[in-house]
Picture (cartoon, one colour):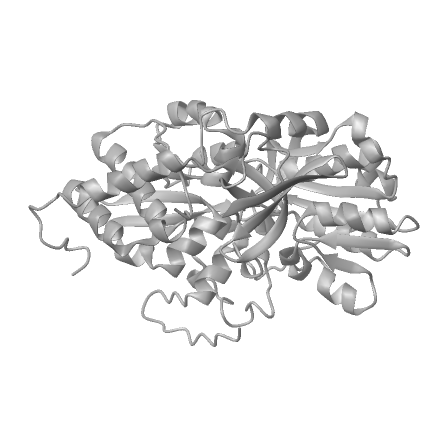
Length: 85
Length: 373
């Protein structure tokens, strides 16, 4: 439906009047249209789908999600959930 | 932070499973909407991890699978015309039409090119002014902004040799179609994270209130999926039904306003036929009058093509979550990725291709699955 991947913006330029950028996917560099994320800055991560950046990834909320999962570790009353046995 | 490995950490999986185990009291049936989520579930065996506690029902969120056969047949017709360069995402080339497929047509000499982005089709149009360049625009809300941008840009640049064959679909009407069916078994929803990244989750509020189902916009990494399932189970166990956004780093309530503006400028909502589900009111998008010069359906004289589906393919039942691929008589036998009878076996987001790839065998009858990929 919407195979999209996070990538880091490393360059921003204009092409045919469109705001474009170069995005680094852990070593693979691709050209991406940035028209839908006009506020994006070099160094930020975007979600890219079919050549278009569709949102700027919110690092603060990503860290919040990860920290919530780390809180779950505090559930000590059960050793290993029977789901895994 | 690179937003991938951090969200695949097995420690988090164990912690979330502990949480699920601590609150679970009865079996639940949860639908994941998106084909990308289905493939993550199957690849990481999340369905097996939760077997007996949660049944995951696979939704119609595979754009290739739901594109109506009439659109495939129309694409085949246009692509066969002289002086046409037909461009499409790769998955669409192997989807069976009534009598042929685009990959086969290409081997018969038609100029059919795979593109990763519609922007490449626009570039091909710039470089081939004497050819008619057509882009096959299929997909959900996530893909529509890109396709709309190329139509908007073609009009701005006066690229008169560019046109788009549109077969767009929208999630909320299809979700209501599934939830209102008498045979519906779905109790909670993992909403498609990137559809919600574009349109936000405000349009799901009426659905969660009307059908009393928890809806959790969810990401695509394995821990995102587990977390989304946990959030749905929390609501089902407490009898709640509201929207709980799991994919915080990407989804906001209002979505991407810039993208929505261009989509509304270029497209109108319309009734749409879904392969396997039939016509769903107000569930598609078509090019608006102001941009009709770029509508391939109007540009190329539409030939009345009689379309027909393989009678052996049960994809309509699979797309509604009423059957699993492994319950299909031709699954992994006559129907394989190299010889697909239906679209869900072709697409990289299709349920059948997920089952085939990750070899899901159900029941006592052991299906010898020769993975020929």
